[in-house]
Image (tube, rainbow, N blue to C red; front, side, top):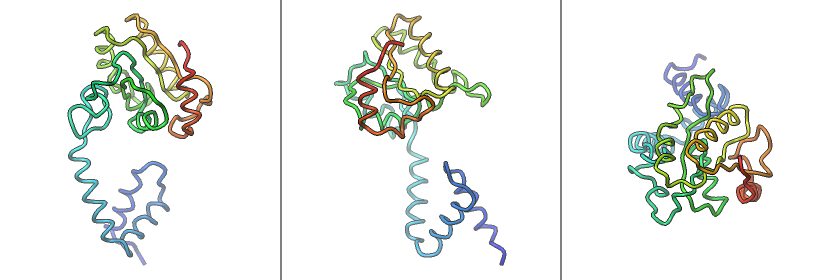
Length: 198
């Protein structure tokens, strides 16, 4: 029996999620349509509202429903400590696993010229402005130690040093080529507290 065109379209739409191949997408589609239609409608409604209302923080670029996210809007945070992370999920990991009370800049990726990701896509003009204001004392790089991460870290280090800002990097416990979001909180806390000059 041939699948309907609409079912094929649903399966294909679900494949946009990371790690979801054709079989997983098909299982999800059948799961939602067979017995969980109320959940499917709630998912659809919530996703639509989230896409319409969630944008980016004007200062750090994380996901936010307001102009400034809750971290940037908190005047008790130390604006002199600026932690650079790759994604909003990395920011969330840092907030949950460490006692960091500074602020963030979210890159939304890593430098990758082959993929067309340059300084503009990472909001480095905004980061440059923050460094030029003179309030930042230390730039903490919490970037995954992949090839692209190392290139990005070097670029950021040069930018910060040009403004006389101290640059540190997460230390022990972060394996080369590893991703921060998969580290346990103990390892990440130790790496954060043992950061070193870059």
